[in-house]
Amino acid sequence: MQSMRSKKIAAAIAAVMQFIQEEVPPAAQPLAPAPCAPSFSPWGAAGRQDAMLFRTLWQRRLGRGC
Image (cartoon, rainbow, N blue to C red):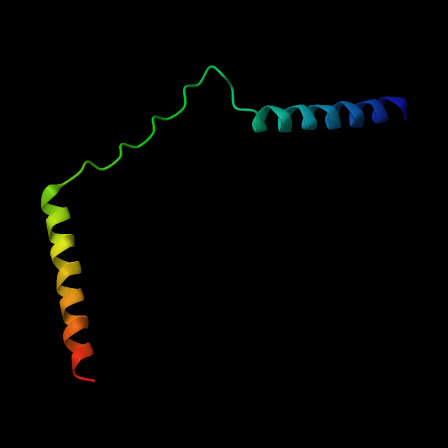
């Protein structure tokens, strides 16, 4: 019986050690590089500004009819 108990204890300790090793990232492996931020596009900014201006003008035109 003593050997069966010691095997269970050894298995439990091995399971806990494996769990701990999986939780802590190893320092030897480099982390993945961060994704690049999208660059500024004047063409896209001008299009967005134009769309916002059109919406503002549309709202003002609808507001006068009331």
